Length: 375
Image (cartoon, rainbow, N blue to C red; front, side, top):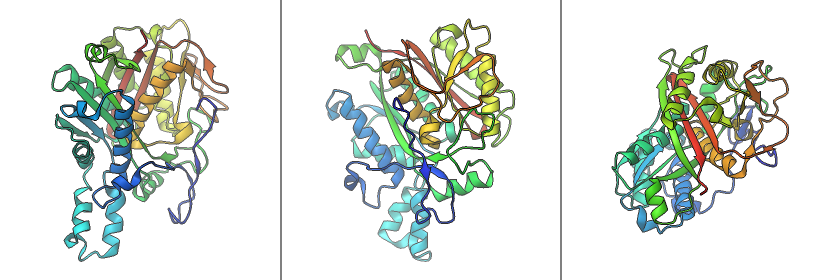
């Protein structure tokens, strides 16, 4: 992102027959062989590899996570494998040993279980599936679990693969842009789907300080709301997301002027971007300067259940790099006087506090506020 590189590319017809559009596919996954049995769907593989990387970067032995909790988000679970299994032999599919394993990996809840089992995590587990806000909601629930004292450490994240089912679904909603998306542009046409996974390790500041951990950031505040408006469309005035932002800032005990950057949901669909821009206008009204906003989905597409977790990680890294990340292909921004639409080159400046905002079908909203963890 700092070099302005996009991961979006045309879909290959041999993988997604009949689909002519733009996607972002994860390539070069490490250590896939370890998770290649029928027990693991691609969703499980993405989650396990992200969890493995998170543990490795935490500076502590894997045994320290035995009593940890885990909250994992997904909207697909094992759907990618179900179609393949049925196509082989619909009548006998459920009787075959590998068929049984694939059937077990269908529910999204299986992602939390299979990841927890693989790494020997014996603390509380929770699976989250509230559409495209799932990854951010998982982090908020993990933070609440941590504050409740239910576990000394909680792993939280989201994972979702590319899947013909979701490509077809968003296509039927006429929500896909066949070309690389352009969030918050007046001529935006829709979203691009991607895939991925991100896992964060949350612990109390006292616990992290006691073991001299490398603290990437502090989760200062969070909130979750619902529009209660429509199964797929956002509330037109963005009031549900605006309320979520306000509640998160209240919890974090910060003002609108304290927030230096918003990593927006920014899908590139006409309805979302219009409602979301109004939400920022409302939530940040009265700021001394327009709020800097961008959509990082312009780099890697919309990763559904993983999106909120990926964007939380990106927000943390933006804070650490002191970088305001621009939206790619943003030529004619939505007219919003209270918003500084980031585009063009990366802007480097101190960034002590930043926000990641997520929304999803069914009206789900989640907002996370991160603060620099440097001492």
